[in-house]
Amino acid sequence: MGLYFRLISVQIRSQMQYRLQFVVDMLATMLISVASFFTIAFVMQRFGSVAGWSLGEIAFLYGMVETSFGVMDLLFSGFDPGNFGRQTRLGRFDQLLLRPASITLQVFGSEFTLRRLGRIFQGAAVFFFAISLVKPHWTLPHLLFLPFVFLSQVLFFGGLFIIGAALSFWTLEALEIVNIFTYGGTEMMAYPMHIYPSWLRNFFTYILPAIFLNYTPAIYLLNKPDPLHFPAYTPFLAPLAGFGVFFAALAFWNYGIRHYQSSGT
Amino acid sequence: MPPIIQVSHLTKYFKVSVHHRGFWGAFRNLISRQYRLARAVDGITFQVQPGELVGYLGPNGAGKSTTIKMLAGLLVPSGGEILVNGYLPWRERQAYVAKIGAVFGQRTTLWWDLPVIESLELLQYIYRIPGDRFRRNLDEFRQVLALDSFLDIPVRALSLGQRMRADLCAALLHDPLLLFLDEPTIGLDVVAKERIRQFILHINRARGVTVLLTTHDLSDVEKLCERVLIIDHGQLLYDGELTSLRDRFGGKRRLLVDFAQEYVDPQVEGAQITVREGSRVTYEFERNTITASGLISRLSELYRIRDLEVREPEIEETVRRIYEQKLLENH
Image (tube, rainbow over all chains, first blue to last red; front, side, top):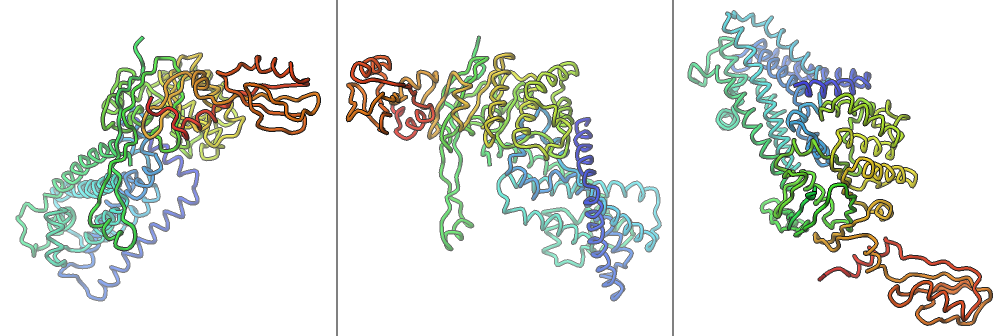
């Protein structure tokens, strides 16, 4: 862990050398995500609710997923598939293999994109705005569960990044597909999942368990009816889904490294 | 002493996807990928003793980099055996790389936006180099590589030559027993090349570090290596001393003569005239037909000589002859 913090501190110091760029980048990131939330908010204003969910409740979904994706994007930026794939083609990954330290740890420490803070701030702002609108009646279990949901989402998105990075050992052409799941996934998860057609919902239930990470926990946390009639314990599957995807991703990542070492892409 | 590098029947095959051309070809590429096997390294055997400085030569695509990557543990061999410093490089990666150094041509191991010295200190941490040893090594390398003028400058602002020097320093701070260099002088000017060569000689002579280097620049080899390995099409063509390579395949030596007067046709037995410019004549002769002194005494019996010079065939020419004429195949 000592090495991790040293590597991260290098990244932070490097970015602080370009202070103006950092500020501009962060503001731009923030503006883009603020604009995307306002789009949702204006549409909601017009129609009042989406499939039984109010503006505050949608903002809750949106705020959660934006914040956790932002935190993930900060912590896992070394695995950002496009960037990682490019760096690997340039021989950067070979340099990591030549050092006597864990590869995964070194990749975690190879980027720490501070401008992602813009997205985190914006997500958190929307989240607290949602709380102020909805005023949920939370008991201790609700409050204890919330950080787990958040952590599970971070691990889920992080797992997708790791899978994308591992795929880039084979091909860079598949990265657009990974982006559909990561960036498209966050967009999708910002809405109550029962609005989607069943084939899409089934995919995000049984293949990639995104539904358990934001929608079903929100049903519990906001005390909403469940039109999909999942079992009562379903909201609590979030950690299972988050950790499950993350560890599966790590296994695939290690497999990818072995492939890289035998094919030398 | 046992060899520090033992390579036997080493092979590396790559799957190369076969691309079909044209519109329908692109479509076929999408639905079915066909592969053929490319043999990058095809059954190589050699050993290196501790303290040797070995040049590894070959034309582009001959398999040099693939071999070095396997030796450094970056690639897993398809067949054969590698034992370096008692390790299987790819299997025991972390323990193995802690005792080797490697510099891969144009790529840097340093952190782009950090001053050089901070990168070196971070490597000290990664390699767990004790403080006193780190300082001792750094002091020595600062002198030999003349690092002082740019230790506080971020790597992104260094010239290629400075960056290479910083990278060499970085590769040696942890006292590796073995150093792999892939094209260490590529893209450098004459002065920078010379400094790098001096340093490579220094760490080999003074510290006994075993060095294996690939290069395009044969003057690197002439100045550094006593032993060369020549590889082409994945096979080892030559393994031996540089001097005997020249003796066997050196081709013709040349004698440049400046006569005291112009002769119509200054022929001499055992040599051919290749260039004539007035009184200046260039002869070529085979080393096993006549010695240089024999040829000179024959000439001076027949003609009046003002000045002369013997030219050895250059190693570059020698190696090119080997590649082009495939002199070493079927040996």
